[in-house]
Length: 148
Image 1 (cartoon, rainbow, N blue to C red):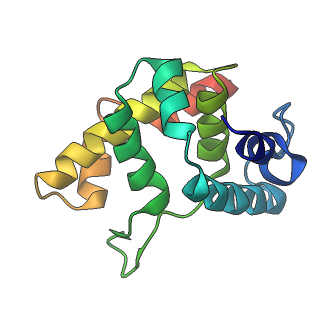
Image 2 (image 1 turned 45 degrees about the vertical axis):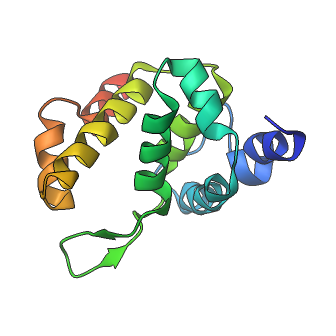
C-alpha cells in the first residue's frame, strides 16, 4: 500500500473511529462512510491487499469493489445510482485492506456480494438478488450477532 493511500485509510478524516466508538447510525458515521466510499473509488492497491489478507481471488475482489463502490444499480425504488454509503461496510473494507481485526461478518460480506453479483448477472434485479443471497450469506444478520 502506498503511503498516501495508507494515510487515507488511517487518517481520522477518513477512517473515523478506529476503536469502533462511532454510532453506525449517527450523522457523523454517515459522513465518514461517504468520505470513505469516495476514497475507495480512488484506491489502487486495496484489491491486492484484500485478496492477500483473505485468500479471495483478486478478480473477485475487484468485482466486489466495483459492485459496492462504483457501479450504478437499479435499486428498484425508482432510484438508479450507486449504493448509499454504509458505515459498517466502510469499516469492513478498511479491516480487509489492513488485514487486522477481520471479523466473520467481513468475510460474509465478500461472500454475499459475490453471490449477489452472480445472481444479477443471471438477470435478477438487485433487490431480488439481495434477498436470495441473504438466505445463504446475510451480512446484516451476522453484523447484528456480533453486536449482541
